[in-house]
Amino acid sequence: MTSTRSDSGPVGILLANLGSPTEPTPAAVRRFLAEFLWDRRVVDVPRPLWWLILNGIILRFRPGRVAKAYASVWSDEGSPLLAISCHQATALREALERRLPGRCRLELTMRYGEPAIAGALERLHAAGCERVLVLPLYPQYSSSTSASTFDAVAEALMRVRWYPELRLVRDYHVDPAYISALAASVREGWAEHGRPDRLLISLHGIPQRYADEGDAYPEHCAATAAALAAELDLADGEWLLAFQSRFGREPWLQPYTDVTLEEWGRAGVGHVQVICPGFSADCLETLEEIEVENRDTFLEAGGREYHYIPALNTRPDHIEALAGLVERHVTDWG
Image: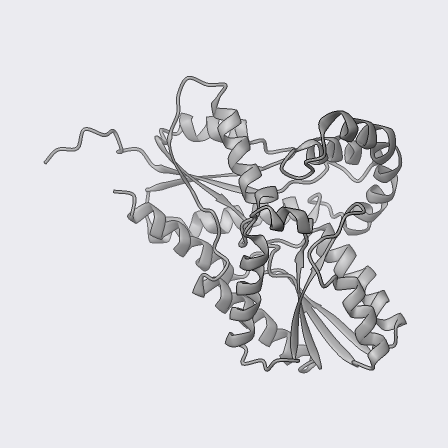
């Protein structure tokens, strides 16, 4: 039977991450934070009140401090997140070409900043992609990350006449290949630094209220942590799930990463290693907050040895896990 659908073109893969400032300066950070923190999915405070707080307080005082933090991790390629994401996109294109020759066209985009979603979608359209798979690089779903990306895709398409057939990868928090890559990275950390007294599995937090209102994120985080611990054959007491990067005054998911590390240091836990499986690419929150600030917190509280296990970044097993995820969607797309 001859299909009436025009599906001869490649499937577009929209690979999305969060984004970062264009440069480590207060002005660039201010522009980035203004876009990021105005997203209702990120902060859902009533707009008039939030406009006053954001513009009257946060964007006046926070950009300078954040710019200094970005400067400490900046490279010739720019922000770590953008540079690594670009390398991931290149590696994933190559992996998909091996697996699905000629069937995919991949574009990298950022939810905030550049490369923008609208431009990436237009490039996929120009390449003849009538089907688009949106793959946010967030293993665990949250309304403040994955759903925000889907919102932005829909908003961009509202401005054009054409509309592709869409698929959205909501999450891959217990994908076996992803868990296997995480476990391999931990084992490599053990081989280099020795097996720690405890492994802290730290994920970005969200307000507790978001979870109470139905966000699946905490359940996904718990499932990832449990799957990783099982893959590593860790016993209870050898690992803990905690949450980092809280912002504002309302309660966020607990236990908090920094508080946990301080308590462990005071309690005589000597050697800690930390992995952040919610981050597909190293960024400010891992390289500055986890690797530097939280190291100091633990050591100053009495800990002896602290090591951060890098994000999966461009590890071949990570790229192959992503390629396998894409391949399953593309081959199943009728």
